[in-house]
Length: 244
Image (cartoon, rainbow, N blue to C red; front, side, top):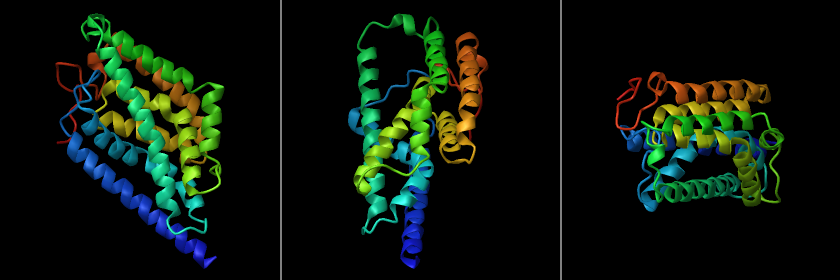
């Protein structure tokens, strides 16, 4: 019993310290970089660095219950192995998103300019993310994310949990890309939503609430983007001042 308590204490310290450090680095690197929807993601190396840090900040708090369970395993570094595997999966998601961004921007997409069809395209993605909250795939991913991690050892458990969480929260992360991949405001918004669904006792009941909220937000962005709090319009300035 004492051994398990010590393992859980070490795991808690590692996760809390990792999340705090990741948030500090992310805030320092991303402050003032929000260019709104269509924010350029930069070179692949720079993007990967900020993406891994950002996902660690956003995801480690919600992965804590699963990581603490894995900490009971009789291993020397189960929490680190679990966390590394978990972040590997989210890094794969980030690479896929980067590839999609580069593919889309390689075409003539003048019709997606913010003064043309951009707000409607962004709104459509947000509405789709909201509708996904009501699907069986979402419910399955959320149920698995809230249950005991699958897999035989810490690393495989981290991979399995990461895949479950991508299925659960991947659409919410797509909202972040649409509203501004470098926006600290929307990053915090999405992180709180993910944490609420995955960790709070009645988290699954939040999914329909978030569905309605996202659908409403999608229509708001499409119809009147300049009035959306926290949304930086491309070529303009944030509609709500964030802390410096």
